[in-house]
Image (tube, rainbow, N blue to C red; front, top):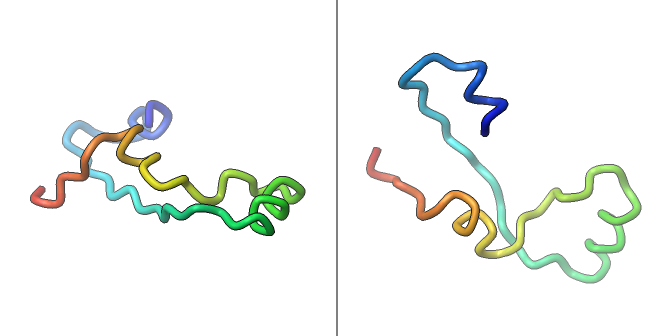
Length: 57
């Protein structure tokens, strides 16, 4: 977020969109080998990092 905020004006709003799911064993193996690791977030990881979403804004 710090990198993104440097490129914005005061009052800018962002919509952070991501998917959370528990990786299956074959998905873990593929993401360990291929260069796009970290593609999926574990369930609860977004809430732990950013807090509860505020859908009212």
